[in-house]
Image 1 (cartoon, one colour):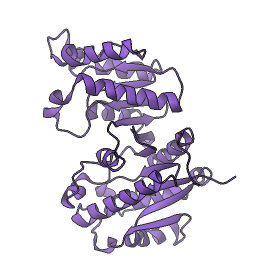
Image 2 (cartoon, helix red, strand yellow):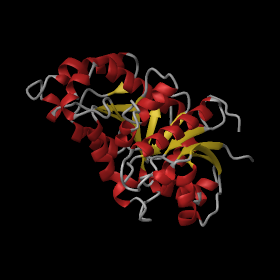
Image 3 (cartoon, one colour):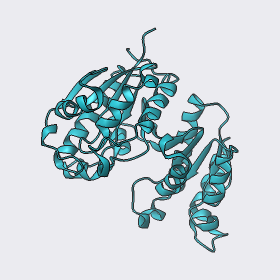
Image 4 (cartoon, helix red, strand yellow):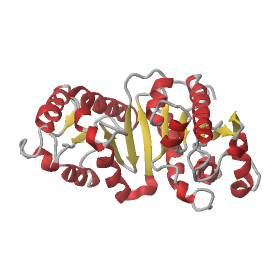
Length: 320
């Protein structure tokens, strides 16, 4: 049986992207389920092939740039940003053309992208723009736990002003629809408040009463099995104990701190709302250990396996 093609980008060449991709695609778990097609910089890959794969290339490679020899490992740069973006552009087109089952991206540096003049703060926003997807959400998977954040990469000081009824409703709907198509039909959602004790009846904040509770009512009336806004600590305990399938949090760290305490090596970032399944490991470029042969590829392997597992349930047919 022919194994499906999977588009995989190498990420920021100054980080651990090449290392974790090379290790992941050479693992028996990955080789058994798909045929990876790697997108990235020719020079960056060349520098890493012998180190991690003894100069073997057990995958198809698509060159998106050839300037990696000018990049200093462990430091963000304009060149690294150009390389990262170039790989994403080509890989997205490959997936849009129906040539791959799904897309898996190695970590990029927001600083490198900014230095290269790339206007997007990260993968999620870039992928949404490139695929003309008007509504997307950043969902994180960790084993059987699925979590989604209403706001993503913004300063803490701006979280409150970016929490809107419409945004909460769209975020939950996108995630529930994705999970209904992939995991199971009946999805139970636990909804987080923003403030301590979920605002304590507006004593500790107004966002629950003004935005989150009205969003809950809209979602509940639409037929979604969802709780009223709960304190985040209580909500996480309930989903960790298996009482719910999805937790909807209000901001980035409300998700990531909990997940990294549960199992950092299993976290997978999933962009929902795209015309194809896209995943990435739930960590960053790790500049501090780049080039030291210390990177753990387990999260990258998890991202690939997740993409294959749920990519197969995606209704769009691919030309493998």
